[in-house]
Length: 239
Image 1 (cartoon, rainbow, N blue to C red):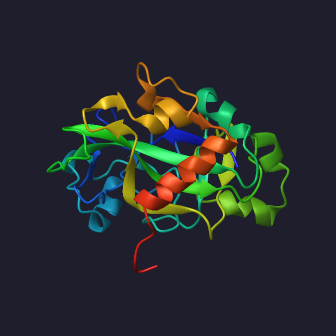
Image 2 (cartoon, rainbow, N blue to C red):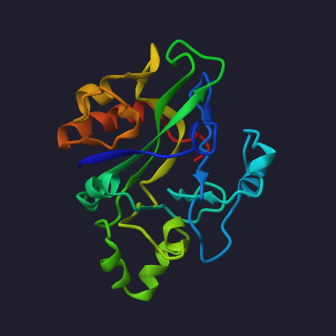
């Protein structure tokens, strides 16, 4: 099993704030705005607001969201799917195979900090897919039978006009999840300081804006990372 971790979610550029992370590790995932035309109406921040504890600014109530990745347990989602149109992410993602691990990390604002948290914000792994099949490129996706294409019908990139994903991935519904607790990638000294998951397990140096880059993990590193995540972000006790 190999792994790639990619950055997702609201940030100080889009839409101008981050989701929160609490002292017990619980957090709230908030997607970025939808920046492209869509073939149909997509959910807005106002549609998400009743399901969130984070206060959504009134100026964003009617703003459509780019609801990608799609976690089945998240509002207005039905499956585990992800698409990307940017080569810097699509490239490493297209090299994964069925059974590999796709991790999602986000920068989150620290609320009422604890010793293990950075003082203001940090990067945290918040969810994962174990891939149910090999990644799809647009050509192979359009060649699929209609019933299989329907798996991606709720993905934000297939709703765009025109669809623009350079890669599409789907998670095994029994082995994919939005975490109950966030797994830190930043050290307690500051959000820009990478911890050993980045500097020792991934192929990234942890220098510069590492929190914006895809992080790659080989087989041995993924096994160690898997143990680290299972210890830090257990499934919800009600599952």
